Every structure is written in structure tokens, then in C-alpha cells.
Image 1 (cartoon, rainbow over the protein chains, first blue to last red):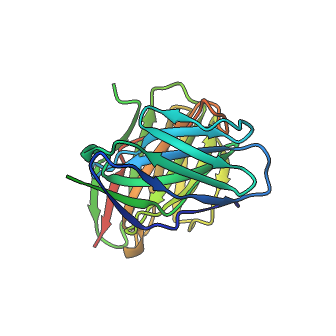
Image 2: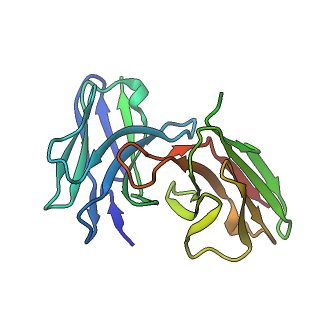
Length: 112
Length: 115
């Protein structure tokens, strides 16, 4: 099975600053999908951004963007202009067919 | 309307009991999942069903039995509950698994506490 590694258990950032969360994965597959999910204290799982492995262009969604390096098997999430509401657990996920695997998560705290 | 709904939201029970968690999705999706999130927030896939057929069955004790009466429902029954079963259980669904346009849609989770 694929493995997903998030090496930063906790991070913090000042409001309005930029922060980057790291994610690496291990797979022998060529076609797959990558996602970042956010889990605020309410425990809802909210999709933040997605990326297709066969697309070289990095995905962006408003203040959220990714740096996808396929050869390095790296998929980092950049949050610009951080807001207090961005405080949450962030999970990186790898998906192939019906199998989605998650990293251990990074707890992000945005400080006022 | 809630897209993926789980009941109950909280469940407190004693060791040895049998309990069920229900999940329903009104998105018309073909694939449904159960994930377990432990106290360290780690999310682990347990089961996946596509059109009522089991397609993923991770190494889960056979005390856990999923049941899919139709493609809109995937219930989780747990026999002989143990302390280690305490966790948050998430149901999820996907239209076309493994597709860019089909990420997982999650329910709000069921917090199970075994005492």
C-alpha cells in the first residue's frame, strides 16, 4: 500500500503570513491523485485542494496552492495570507482507484 | 441537506457490548468508506464498498462488520467492543473513486467511547 508522510506534526504562523506544509509519498504508480484536507476543531473533513499526478501545473485555490514535484514524490501545501480560521489539522492524501490513504497530519495554529 | 450523514454523533458504551453506526449519503455516489481516526488523529481506512460490494477490507478485526443494504447506505456493526475501539469513525463517499473530480465526501464522524 502507498504511504504518505507528513514530517511536521505541528506548525504555527502569524496571521497574514505564509506557511508551507510538507508531504511526501511513496508509490510505484504513475497515475494517481493527491489531496489536502483540513480538519478544524469541529472535526469536519474539508477538501482544500486536489492535484492530478499527470498534470505538471500546480493546483491553486484562492489562498491555497501546492508545489507538486512528481519525481521527488513531494506535494507541499502553501497557505498565503493566513487567517485565524485556517487553524486546523491538515491531512495530505494519496488516492489510487478507490483507495485513499492519509498522512499523520500537521496541526497548524494561526496566531493573531 | 447533509450530503453524508452518520448517526449517532456520539456513542458511549461498555466493553463487551455490540453497537452499530449508520451512514447514509444522498449524493448518488457509488462508493462508500469507513475510516477510523485514533486519538493521535491518524486516519486509517477500514472498508470500502462499491455498489454494495466490498472492494477494500483492511486488516480489521472480524468483530467489525460493514453492511451495505443499498448503495446509499453503509452501516458499521461492532461486536464485543474493546477499549481500543474508542475512536472517531468517519463514513465517506465518492462518485468515481480514483478520479480528480471525485474526492471523498466525509460525514461529521461518530465519536465512540468504550468504558
